Image 1 (tube, helix red, strand yellow):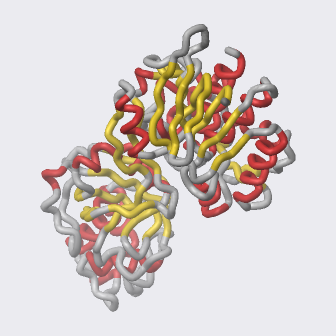
Image 2: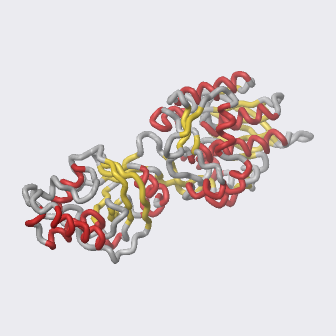
Image 3: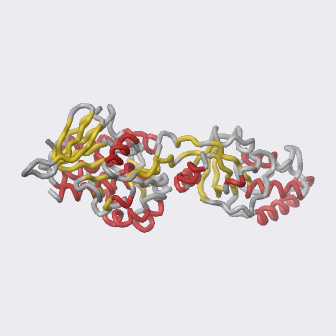
Length: 427
């Protein structure tokens, strides 16, 4: 018999267990993990460095990083946000650092530091951790003269407890169990993924990165050719756009701007079956007319130089070469000899190039899902179910997800902390 059972041995589960035990050390707490290993997502986060959280601590600004859950997380972030997470780990001997982009990592640059901290705390506080213990059923049981309990059935044995916290992440089987208990599950779709694109303009130059503005275009624009000269689509209103660092890969495009679009457009892009056109402005400080004017100036200044070698702006050389070629300008053609029509083509390639996305790839191993328990069925002052008393949720099991930068973990820490307060103080 346990006082509290936490299902899910990930970030939310461990964080909640530790915070519960800290408030009331007398509570008997167990964590049930279906796999052989706990904290698997913590281990792979940030390329194995663990992006613990983000330096942004203003709740009003923090919520702007959540495509789903923005409104619901405002109150919780006023209660517990990134500065509290930093204090939690630093008070337990974990030294953290903030990088230029606001992401916070352990100084060790190793996720094992975070894992060791959480595991050490569970041992110190007497929290039981049961591995290879997959949940098969959860149901309330009532006995005369006793509090209503939860019976938690697993592949190994059955447990009883007063309170249950589900911190199971993106788990279709658990979502089905929750649905059978009367909750609504928003169908899950992928978030945080890269774009698969086969296009000569970005072919053969993996590793090239720059800053760009990327817009997702309406589906009816999908007839645009993905290679050769860019067709004008300036009048097509984008459905979603973002600006930021972009990375050319072996399979297409990645980088923060692509991942941001994949998060905010998760449902839309799923509906499009991940086949859609995008428009890229490789020079966000310029628009078509202004870059064309600059190219005309360069035509005079660099008259005797070739277009390929004498770039008009500071720009990745290999990408410039590909875009010049796509504009119909030969590698030996000098600025003085380039027609205005070809410069118009180059201006379009630089600021209005259209590319066809033909599928997605998971970003490294950090798969994130949009979907889960319907938000209006959860009390975000306690993260308790509005349908079942003493049933709590935290982390990705809920229909909340974020862009990259430590924000998904912060949702996990915040939800776990607030649920822990409610669970422990109500005993």
